[in-house]
Image 1: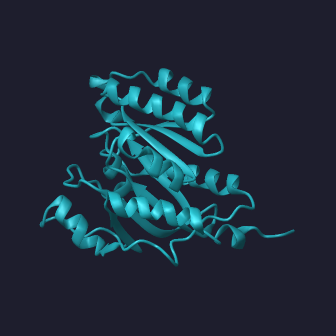
Image 2 (image 1 turned 180 degrees about the vertical axis):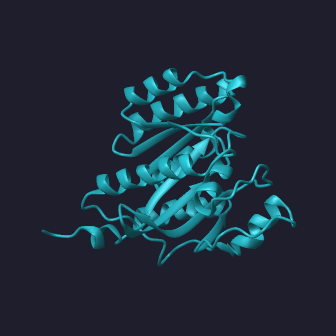
Length: 233
């Protein structure tokens, strides 16, 4: 039987984490990659994490774009770059859920082949809940998306389980198509020390996070170049 694990590594799995502001996108991404929780961020740009993770029992190159801008500002760039999307909302914020619902609808229309995970964050704040789980789950089922509720602040295990299973699905659905790599013709990128970057976000006295292969910070112009390069490869 042919082993497709090698072919799956021919290009990274590209995942965009998108959602309204202050729903915990960055906290979710860092929690997943480092098992640390960071409650407050000072960031006004996308952050691209490039790493190798165990996906379905084998090493897999993964690129995760932690986006900061709202859908109307950057959806085209992100929709063209990623093959999978984690759409985040806060269960305590009905407006963020409306944003997420509209985005899932847009993805089903514009990127019907993409894998989508609709993720409700801040489940530890149930006393402030504005979005019922059954409502969000029903919406996800309607659009053939995965669904999960997690508390990024409370525990890393549910976050890891949700994203590990999602990446496994992305890898499975990729089939024989090869992802694009950031290689020749890539835009100029600012490569930063992950420890230094996250230290500036969470404060000097916090212990350093676990190692991540590479963190790239992209401004608007660089993100647009990245999309143009991915089309040409």
